[in-house]
Length: 121
Image (cartoon, one colour):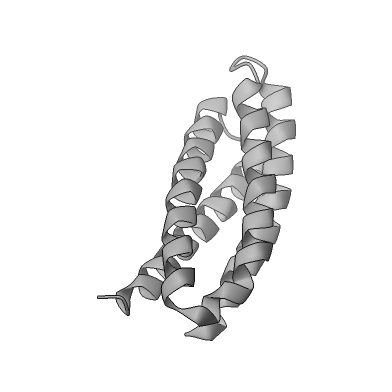
C-alpha cells in the first residue's frame, strides 16, 4: 500500500498542473470571475490535500525529503496569494484578475518544482 502513495502524489501534481494551465488560459483569453473563483477554490482544496499527502510520502520514502523544504516554501507563497484572492470583492473583476496573475506566477514555480519530483520514481 505504501508504494501507491507516490503514484497518488503524481496524480495530484497532474491535477494541480491542469488547473494552473486552465487559470492561465482564463487569464489570457478572458473568462468570468465565477470561473476564476471556482478554479481558485479547486486549487486551494487540492493544495491542502497535496500538502498532507506529500508529508506522508516524505516520511515513508526518504528520496522525497530533499523536495520538502522548497515545495513547502512555495506552497506558503501560493497560499498567501490565495488568501489575497479571498479578500477581493466578487464584483471587482480587475482586482480579481490582478491577484489571479500573481497566483499564476507562484503556481507556475510550484508546478515546476512539483514536476521535478517525478524523476524520483
